[in-house]
Image (cartoon, rainbow, N blue to C red):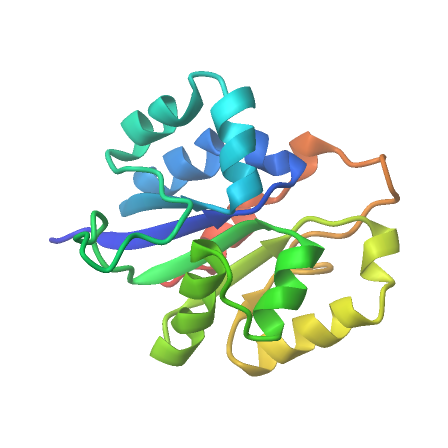
Length: 180
């Protein structure tokens, strides 16, 4: 049986410091994992992740992507069967819902909706950001477009600013929401 390919798309939020957790769990569930980072998440991984980008590339067996390739360059990743965006920031959710594609991560997410790919999004933002009127509108826009946004009881519950618990981030809920 051929493995399905999962694009794990991560934004710069504290759970991105533990990307080895979802990568290992998805691999154990039979996924071939390719990691896509927003530009800031790439900077975090490069500077703060133990072993840096090289460790993540060794873990996945693929290059870690964070920017668009040139048109003359070949694709280095297999095409995705599903997308998991985690952690998803309030910045990215608002840009994604608006159809902005100014980064590779956003371009893949925006295109993924149009391609009808299964997409699971696991947010990570605080309660103050959650109260901004754009955030619930963006979440609803994405849900209407078919994205599984795990916000609230079924996934991530926003915490008060500077009171997050990195160990409580529900990676497994996101992995369980992926298609079998």
